[in-house]
Image (cartoon, rainbow, N blue to C red; front, side, top):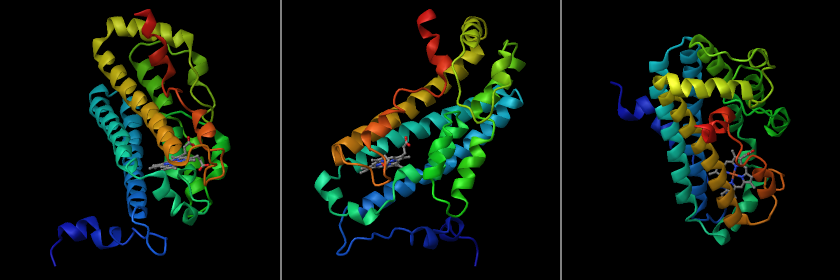
Length: 260
Ligand code: HEM
């Protein structure tokens, strides 16, 4: 049998994976499952692209990095748009099957934690909420201990003649990205003198904005669907999620704008 569309994509297995738990079946549970699965597939791609861009940065390959950042920002914008579909589900409809989720929650998404960590938003304490299931917590912890995209960005900048402060180059890998005034001064100079890098910086800013938009839209989705209820993952819900709101992944790229 020659390779077919179905066998290449392993469709029989993939399309077996949508299994609502409500009995009798609640219509909207299918939407809830499909949208989360689709998000997880996009998360896989985001991680795949992030690993590539790390290599591009360390190899000082600007023209390889640019299309990858374009792809990354487009995925993020798409993810934000897809939340509209889930918002067609009413709070009543969600309440009809929410108890079937038990303690399951996006809070436990190991790929989301990997994404936060790979882009430098590191917070070790959240890994304990990732279940020790099929190596998922280990995957999140591994990312925590790896150099982030931002660390590789510093390598790239150094190769482009930017004086990256020594404390940034030697920081602990498990620590989150910290803004640096000394780096901001340098970035400002690059903005004026190296226009090809401006393209890169703006794409990274697009991605960062997309990530922050995702957080904002997810919070609004949660607010309109469950209000002030606690999350199924056991956090206080909206109040927990707000802690990460408006926190950029690349703070230095935002901090210099009023100086231009
Ligand atoms: C009706 C829809 C949704 C509701 C009511 C909801 C609710 C929540 C709540 C309350 C939390 C806080 C943690 C906890 O459970 O205690 C949370 C976290 C999270 N949710 Fe959702 N969510 C929804 C849809 C989604 C979708 C479609 C995704 C896509 C994968 C998602 C991904 C996440 C992630 C990654 C977190 C962790 C965020 C962080 O730690 O900053 N959620 N969600």
